[in-house]
Length: 328
Image 1 (cartoon, rainbow, N blue to C red):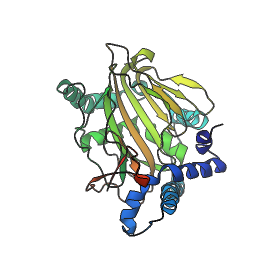
Image 2: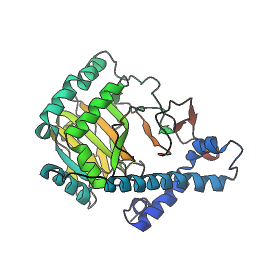
Image 3: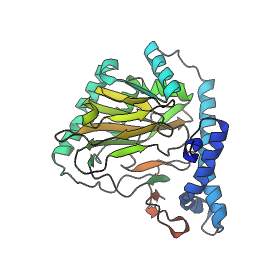
Image 4: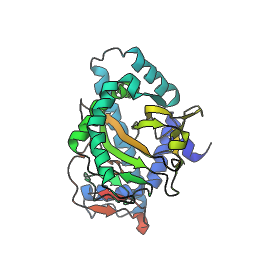
């Protein structure tokens, strides 16, 4: 087993190892920490590598413990059989796949008449190769400065359309299943909507993400998707593989531990997708926001991450570029 795999383990040793890997690999969190502590603090590079990497991991773990305790103290209805099936899939394999159209056809229709209609109009007037305008970044969010070459991203999404996505999460059972699995309420720290084209060579190869602990992803694929149409492939906790195929499919998955990949669609095809990153929330909330196409997550969940950022700062630990930016 590789160190990377051990670092993503679910047991205590795995979590400690993952924290150690983050302490080394996420030294760029020094930027927001320096701002909060004062620019004359933490000159020792070893100290700031260890402390800033660990503080992110520890803060998100503490936040989840508090959110979970709050959730367990509240009254929760017994999940419906369909939701219980999703919870079982999430627990056993780290992912749950089902048809949104079969589960909640009205939710699919509402999304089609709202967000997808605006998305289609945007795509009709947007040339291939379009690069998004400066994203609506929130303070403390991490991001990349560029987007994939074969994706045209909808960067005109409004807060009302974000709320439509939240309604979709509720009506299709995503929220209830994931809250029961994590034993925590949820909020959405980024919504992304894009069209995936066959052009270019940048298939999304097999990988895992580096989201905060206990964060999950939901992806909804519009219309018919198959293996030659850019379908997502996942490898569950036990190594079992699955291709997300069919009409109006949803997948909820543990992107930190479940390997996933997506090949380019075949010529003449494209794939439309909505992706939401979800993380524990201390109190009942409908918070879901668009933070930019390549935005990642808030480094400190205890701080407000709905405050507009003043600027984007390149992250250069020890003077070396990381390819990442942080909104400060």
